[in-house]
Image (cartoon, rainbow, N blue to C red; front, side, top):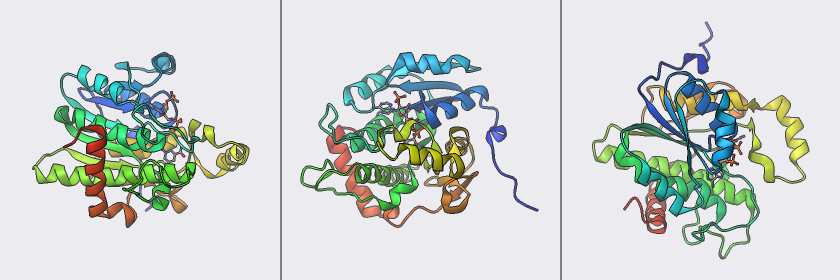
Length: 290
Ligand SMILES: NC(=O)c1ccc[n+]([C@@H]2O[C@H](COP(=O)([O-])OP(=O)(O)OC[C@H]3O[C@@H](n4cnc5c(N)ncnc54)[C@H](OP(=O)(O)O)[C@@H]3O)[C@@H](O)[C@H]2O)c1
């Protein structure tokens, strides 16, 4: 008999649980926040545009709050964390950008590395004392093509390439998960660090991909998940009893679409030495996680 596919209908009753979803104003984060809320969790939509966050959450059923968080700004991250009180069951590091033109964050980080990795790194470390269950970080199948240039994280001496910058930051997400899980286990903590990826899902993520947008859109209609299905690996990773360090993605061909299952990460994402050195560099850059 074929194994039953896991869907959002299989989410447990999440009453009493508090969950932060970053980037909950659009795409996968919005769907995940709505589903978690509908299943009883108290959900904090951590968004860079609070008006947009309030607007998209209008149809939410349940307990939610919208709070400002700009992951491309360490001051905003510190302010968000400083406001936090009480237990936090799950932090979902979902917010991300893809293929943006060359740009620096206010802290002078390359925009992808800053928004997709260094921001979530700082946020996680600042919130870690409150986290009781797990940290979920959303990566991508494109992490497989990433590389960590520890000597040049911000493209100071390499020619800038937007896809490379995205891929590197998504590999950083998995190396962060690997190292975080190692550190938690070493301390005997029951908190888990897990990762997810949506395959390819139709969201606003490709907004910067000028020229190929039309092609991506028409191909994606047939080949990809919609945002609803793209959010399933994140929801699974956030709520199911899976081992720390797990990487959850769609079960379909090429892992591009389908229903959530646990996958192996790539060899590059299992490099413990690079993971440790990336952690040290990120700790120094963000002054967190030392
Ligand atoms: N869609 C895919 O095919 C795909 C594939 C692999 C991985 N992913 C990953 O899935 C995650 C969600 O992406 P998505 O596809 O749902 O894209 P999306 O629709 O563009 O959503 C991205 C979210 O991140 C937020 N965000 C961007 N920069 C931010 C910042 N500086 N501070 C706080 N929030 C910020 C956006 O806020 P605004 O609403 O204000 O723009 C938005 O809410 C990302 O980590 C992405 O890398 C997606």
